[in-house]
Image (cartoon, rainbow, N blue to C red; front, side, top):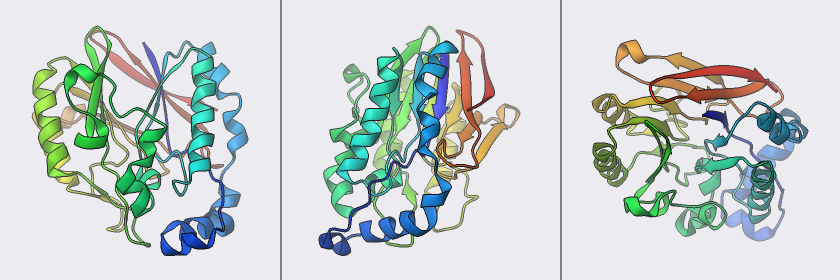
Amino acid sequence: MKIAHISDLHFVKRSWNPTQFFSKRWLGNLNSLFIRRKDFDYAKLEKLPSHLKSLGVSLVIISGDVTTTSDKREFELARAFTASLEKEGLEVICIPGNHDHYTRSDYRNRTFYNYFPSSWDTSLGCNLKNDGVTAKKLCPGWWIVGLDTACSTSWVYSTGYFHPRTEKALDELLQKLPEQILLVNHFPFFQHESKRKVMLRGPSLQHLVEKFPQVKIYCHGHTHRRCIAPLEASGLPLILDPGSTTHRSNDGWHLIEIQENTYSQKWIPL
């Protein structure tokens, strides 16, 4: 089975509605206008669906930040893009990033889940919206597990939070899944970012991953930097971050191939 891992698309529709000054959205709009506008190239996504299909990809993972400020129109752009992938026969799995729970209102109302499913397999009894975790069977020998560790933050922060409730739900779920696991989260669990950008309680997630050696691959985004870290010899999974797929400095995405007893990855140019 071939899987494409992309991330941090940051679709943007700027709004100058005066009510935004009561939320963090005005800061995101100013940032996208004066700083981010020159950094992103959305045209590179136009040929991606047919390119993925030509390579035999069957599943696309988007590890968060499909929007810039959680604006409804940005979610509609993101959903239009995933629909273009689905039109090519590709399955899409998407989890939220901090920009998808950007304002307190959008985090409280979980606006992201008006556009993307919260549960991938209802028989498991857990979902992203309420428990911060969901999962589904991928193929013989493999499951994919998704986390929602994103939250709204103050104006100068973009941190995540591995909630104890999510930790408990993930622990219980992993105990039920003895097969190999591809785990998807928006944030890295390492604390290498500045304190304004890390996932709080990241070490708790790392310790939990170490407890379950069947977690073979950990896909994340958030950093906008490409990362390929084969840490299996250290008791950790293969860690993959494709960077921001729409960023002008980014030149590709991760192709993951899984079989019943093996897995591999390759960097593919856009």
